[in-house]
Length: 100
Image (cartoon, rainbow, N blue to C red; front, side):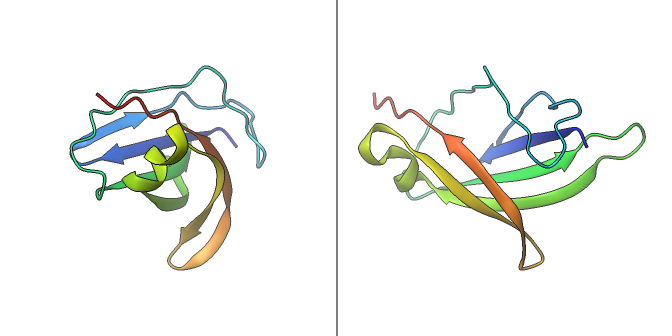
């Protein structure tokens, strides 16, 4: 399995590099992106995908509130991923909040 993450805020989507041969316990390093947050009440949506040669496979997804991302200068937490209401796993996300 070669998982990667798509993180979406409003109409902006960022895609990580695939963690080649990451299997079910992938670790990404040096993956970062800056979103220009307009409203803390907005949701950040993430999808975990498995990179394949012809068609990438959906693994799971989740939602994080902007307020959670801004709390205490950022988060370092585990978030549940689901597929059609069924838990598919967890992902650890680290964020840093830089207010303007």
